[in-house]
Every structure is written in structure tokens, then in C-alpha cells.
Image 1 (cartoon, rainbow, N blue to C red):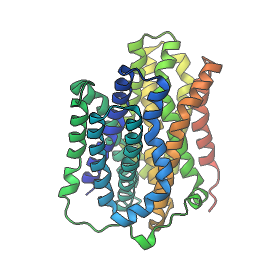
Image 2 (spheres, rainbow, N blue to C red):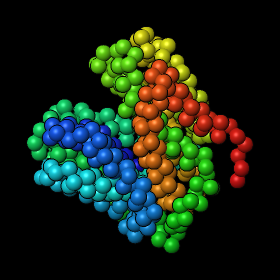
Image 3 (cartoon, rainbow, N blue to C red):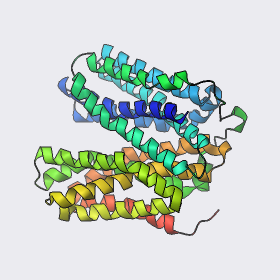
Image 4 (cartoon, one colour):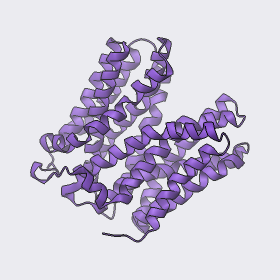
Length: 371
């Protein structure tokens, strides 16, 4: 069962890595401004935040598998519609719709994985999930290398790949749904008060991940690297994300998820501090980015595992919804805030920002727990 859920998560990750660069390149060729490109690209995250209060009820109505199939299937259809209509207002609406349905599949998948795992294995399960999702994100741009970015071909191929990841879930025999309508509680603000550290992990993850992906190449260019070397920074960073999630999950099952998150927060706070000193030393820079990338992305995967540990089953739908909403909010704020600090302090602004957020999480994790 978990393998089928992982397969659909791979598809969601694929679209998260595939759609933004395709949209950016297509709109740029059509003469759209950078502001328009950014608005259309970020519309999906905005949609997840706006639709968050509705998701628990939809999941209760259609069940976990139904929501995953609905989200991924409609997401594929939207890709085909984007190939047929290229106007910016139409794409903005379609991108909002894509965020709505893929967000539904995203949240339902994580609820199902938490329900299907126990405390002894939850860290490893979420580590594998983090690896699979990140692999999908990495494969997105690689798929564009094969399909190109012209015409309808990339949209059609993306839609077919997305549908293909649904096949294992469609072939899965009937399973008992974990979320019952009468058990869903949608008092979303209450979940933040119940487990603020879990939600802080989601916010820091979105904030810093988005800033890293958007601004690391720019930081490299400002430091004197050429364009290819600057882009390689993100490649090595993402490689650590893909490879280290499962080992970190196994470690979390042994030493506890809060302790593992604290170690990851300490590593992610130290990495940016060392970045300016290592930027021109390839043999130091590559290991630094690899470890930093892996430990940073564990904020999300092990944050989801910690959420499954802290919240009872009846609260998981609401808790997972808030977790994703907070993560998306961080994803929207991260590049803007990090870019503003880079403008103010070109050398130290971005590293200070990227260190401060994980340090805040570390301090929260080290405080005595209050129930």
C-alpha cells in the first residue's frame, strides 16, 4: 500500500518540478514580465493556503484514495488545458486550480502515510517519502530536457507521466479509509496552539527551502562564480535532499524525531555560516551543500512524522492541512525576504537569513515540552 502512495507522491513532486520552469520559459518567450511569471508560478501555493480550511471536509467526503486520484487526475487534465490555451489570465486561473487539486492529493497522501505507519517506523516511512517526492522534483526539469519546452508536447508528456504514477494506486485492492466524516475536526487555529514546534518546522522548511532554490545561484554569481557553477550549487544541494532523507528518517526512529530535528536544525544553521568561506573551495563546498541540503529538507519530512506522533488520528486531517498551509506560506515569503536582505547586505544578508530561521527552530526544539 505504501508503495502505491509513494508512486502518486512521485507524480506530485514531478509536477512541482516540471510546471514552474515550463511556465516561466513559455511566458517569457511570449513577452510576459518577470512579475507576471512570478505571479502565475506562485498561484498554486496561494491556492493551497486559501483552500486549506476546505480540505479536511473534502477528504472526509471522498476518502484518502479518492482524493489522491481526484487531485492527480484533474492535475493532469489541467496540464492539457494549459497546452490548448496560452493566455496569461487563463493560465493564472488554471495554475490556481492546479494548486487546489494537487494540494488535496498532497495532504491526503501524507495523512495516509501517517495512518499506515507506527511510531517505530514513521521516521523511515517519511524519509522514504521525502526522497521520492524530492526525486520527482528533480526529475521535472530532466523531463523538460527530453520533451523540450515548445508546443504542446511537454504538456502532454507531463500529463501522461502524472497519470502513470496513479496506476499502482488504481490497482490497489479495496482498502479501509482512515478518515471518517464524523471524526474530522477543522478548527485549524487550534492545531497550531496544540503543537507550535511542528508548525514552526513547516514554516521554516518552506521559508528556507524556497529561498535556497531561488537565491543560491544568485549568491554564487555575486561571489564571482560563472553561471554554470552557480546553477551547480542547487544541483548538489538537491542531491543531498534526495539521498539523505531515508538515513535521517532511520536515525529519527532510533533517537527520537525531536532530537533528529534538532540535529538537522543545528546543521542547517551552521551550513549558511560556512558558505561564504567555502564558496571558492570546491572540495569543501560540495560536501557542505550536500549535508546542508539533506538536513534542511528533513524539516519537512520529519516534521510530518512528528505531527503523526503528536496528533491523534481524529486530528490528522486538520493538522496536516495546517502543516501544508504554513509550509506554503513560508514558501511564498522566503524568496522575497531573502532577496531583500541580499540587496541590503550582499555578502552577509542571505547567509544570515538562512541561518537565523533554522536557529529559531533549534531553540524551540530545545525548550522543555509543554502539553
